[in-house]
Length: 296
Image (cartoon, one colour):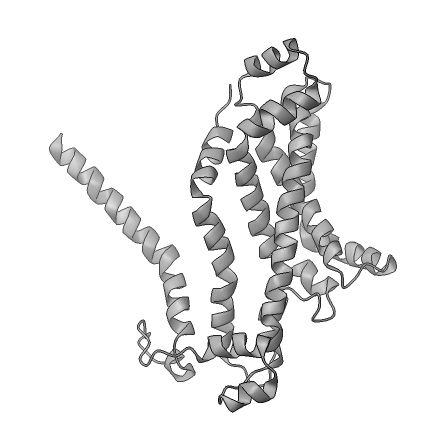
């Protein structure tokens, strides 16, 4: 028995080590590379610990955003156009992701509740159709959506990107929340209905407060999907006032004098918000996913 437990623990530790190498290793290399000089990136073997430690790429991004080119040059730092607009695009991505997260959870909750609780004809067909609609590749819808946005004068607009992202995220939100709502005992709703509450009051006073873990999980999912969206951001945006971080990050590679360390630093900055969100709401995410997987 002891030998069997020992073998189990060894396998568990080996699996954990493999996970760290495969998933955490590349990110650690990304962070390390952003703190190196460009000549160190091409060294073989790979340099894991920067020597010397350099913050030049981060200085280029932050100083380029807050100071004009003359001030940046006085500090002997070269600042490209992409570096100067990157933090602004970062802000745009945040507005889009937070807006999509909030409205997807808001509309998704009230759409998922009747699917989870009301026995109407075609309920499962409707639920299946919602998911099937999301399975249509975004690339197949890109041209008609972009043409429609331009015809309506809605191109180069953050609101347009919010609406587009919501149309792709909302089906996931509805599917996740209806599964979570089914885990809440119906006896609580029956008691509220006996006290005179209507369906809307039951949803607001009982279902929504008890579904905070599920709502948080859906919100984080919506945030992550919207934060990294690139295709429609590239096709819809035309000026730096509406560029997102993914578009500007791609623009770095089109520069005549490509600074790969700056591109890596931009990638590190782009990863930070989703990681912070995931760590901060970790217990809600785990609780929401586990509860949503259980059926009454």
